[in-house]
Image (cartoon, rainbow, N blue to C red; front, side):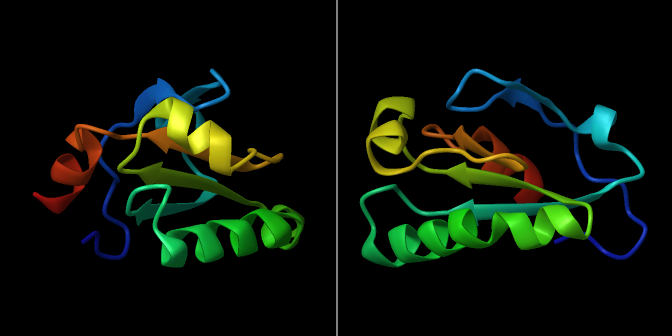
Length: 102
């Protein structure tokens, strides 16, 4: 877990819509980083759908959202559609989960 004013570990990857996500470009901005279970999990589905519905509220206060899911890109795309300011990343092998846990 990060502590206040600690720099987040590097993120440089593509979202499920092939948009490049580079955390260094977002430096100085507010970024919400979330980790979720596989895309077929009912709890994760409810939480992600709510986030998609409410991302405009986060955009209004300048918050970009990055969501890591322990699923393949194909499975994520069949369950969710990214919206402006919300980036979903397939983290099937969990390298980012592991990177942020250490």
